[in-house]
Each structure stands twice: as structure tokens, then as C-alpha cells.
Image (cartoon, rainbow, N blue to C red):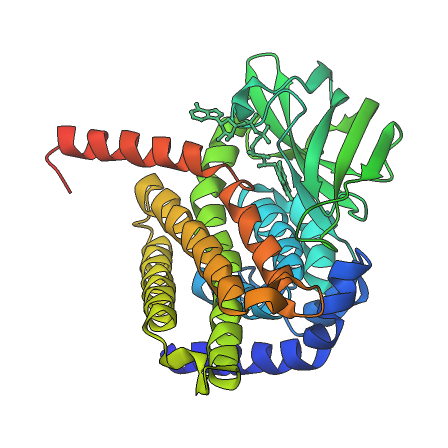
Length: 377
Ligand SMILES: Cc1cc2nc3c(=O)[nH]c(=O)nc-3n(C[C@H](O)[C@H](O)[C@H](O)COP(=O)(O)OP(=O)(O)OC[C@H]3O[C@@H](n4cnc5c(N)ncnc54)[C@H](O)[C@@H]3O)c2cc1C
């Protein structure tokens, strides 16, 4: 397996260098969503990496998905975010929880890149408190009428299919909603600090009528779909931060070797060495920890404690590494001509998106106490 992972990493690296790197500045500056790359990523088998071949996927695992996530994010944090939302938050979830109708209608098209996908959980008044959502699906025999809205949805301005959570008579239910459903509309795309080019926006549901075959998972059991996917989502998205951190570290080390002050390359100054030492240590330890967490997903041994702590540490480390890298660039780090300026802005998102670090800390502490009540680690 290790050899397979190495080959995959080499392939994604080549793809990223050829197809993504040359666009990374345009993606940020023009808020440009490179939608054509989704079809190319589909052809390479990256989008449906965790989905079996019979449904159009590559039949691999979450470690492979994390490798792709890291390498794409190294070239462009924004494309890494959009890839993660499409491939993991939407597609992998639809495959795992969807019945045959969902798999046949959406999974294959999402694997090929013919469809773009999103996960719609957050609402204007339900962010961290996601279970307080107001979107409602009312049952009428074989159909549901859906009313409500979602906000902050990655890829929403372009997506064809959305995994959406709505309140039903006795709980929450997950549904697949299509952009071509009558009553569906989109709000404007948000203008963001970072992750520019990964389109984020609002979507509205005005009496959308859908058949019950659009249910994902079980009726009134959407909370299971939401919480069941969360561990995978957190542990794969940690690699969005890790790719960004590796880029920041590379940029900083290379610059510290080129830039001379006081007739010396700046990496010879102890205060710069201290920065590089901590940056590397945090990068390597966050990556090893996140990989270990993912191995536990593959072995079905992952729990909320691993998932929340791996993304907490990866996102904090990435933000720290990118900030220190910017400092190593001195004044040039503050100028848009240098990639580190973009990488720093991109590094902040994962401390907020996919659940904030405050909520992750709460999950970690609660899981820890539960473990100790049951005998310890
Ligand atoms: C670029 C971007 C992309 C996103 N993509 C998606 C997506 O694809 N799909 C989707 O559904 N959502 C998405 N989100 C939404 C994201 O998951 C939410 O922004 C996040 O969960 C926080 O919700 P909120 O913004 O409403 O903040 P709030 O929940 O209002 O939180 C405000 C502050 O209060 C803190 N806080 C809240 N409750 C507690 C508590 N109990 N204890 C301690 N502190 C607390 C928070 O940590 C935060 O610091 C995205 C967000 C962004 C910015």
C-alpha cells in the first residue's frame, strides 16, 4: 500500500505543478474558480477516490484522499477547499449514505466532474449550533416540500447537487437537492479574505418539491448522517491546512537561503533559525498526527477525539507556520507579488470553516472526559 500511496502522490504532484500552480495567483486575484479542472480531476480519478469503481470511482481510501487534498492545497489552498467540499463533504457522503437511486443519479456524475457538489449545513442563524437549523421539509405522501436557506456554502455558486439537512416531523433528514429543482435559487458569491476562487455563497429553497428517493440515509435520522461524516470530513480537511503549511514552509526556507542582510543569508541568524525549527516541528507533527488519525478511519477505529484534535492542531499549526513565514519575508511578505501573502490569508480559514476551533476544543474535552470515565485512554 505504501508504494501505491507514493505513486499517487507523485502523480498528483505532477498534475498540480502542470495544471494548478500556473493558475494559483489568478485564482486568488480574480476570484477565479477553475471549473474545467474538475473534469480533469475526474479523469485522473481524484474526485471519486474513495468510491468503488462500479460507481465511477477509484476504489481507494481516505489516506489517498488526504494525499490528493494535501498536494492540491500545496498549489492552491482554495482549490484544495473546493476539492474537499466536492469530493469528501458531498460525494463521499452521498455514496456512503445514499441508496441506489442517489448513487446512480449523482455519484457517477460527481466522480467524473460532470456535476459539482456541495454540503449545505450552515444557516444564517445556525452556525456552530448546526442542529438548530430552520430549513424545513414537509412530507406529503411520497414527496417533500422544502423551504429555507443555507449560507457559507463552498462551491454553491456553481454546484449542481447539494447534500442538505432539513427539519422533518421527528428530527432532521438529509436530502439531495439539485440546482435545477423548481424553487431553488442562489445568492451572490461572498467576497472573502482568503480562499478566494473557492466560491462561497447562499442558497434558497422556495417550496422545492422532491420525491422521497432523494432522502440520504434514513428519514428523521439525518443527525446520524451529519455526525457520521464529521470525523472523516475533519480528518481529510486537516490536509487542506497541511498542504498550505508545507507551501509556507518551503517558501520561507528558500527565501531565508536567498535573502542576505549584514552580509549573511538570513537563515544564519538565530532568531530566524528558531522560527524555522518551530515551523518544521509543527508541520511534521501535525502531518504525522493527522495521518495516524486517518489510519484509524481506515481501520474503523477513528473517534471524535482523533478527528477534532487532528484538524485543531493542523489548522493552528498552518496559521502559525504561514504567519512566521510571512515574517521571514520581512516587508516583501506584505506585498501581493509574493505568494506567501496569499498563503497566509488562506491559512486562516480552517480555524473557522468545517466547525470552529472553539467547537473542536469542546468536542475534544468532552470526548476526553467520557474516555476517562470509562477507564482512560
Ligand atoms: C469560506 C467558508 C467556507 C465554508 N463552507 C461551508 C460549507 O461548504 N458548508 C457548510 O455547511 N458550512 C460552511 N461554512 C460555514 C462554517 O462551517 C461556519 O462558519 C462555522 O461552523 C461557524 O459558524 P458561524 O460562522 O455561524 O459562527 P458562530 O457559530 O456564530 O460562532 C461565532 C463565534 O462564537 C464561537 N462559539 C460559538 N458557539 C460556541 C460555544 N458553544 N463555545 C465556545 N465558542 C463558541 C465560535 O467558535 C466563533 O468564534 C464555511 C465557512 C466559511 C468561512
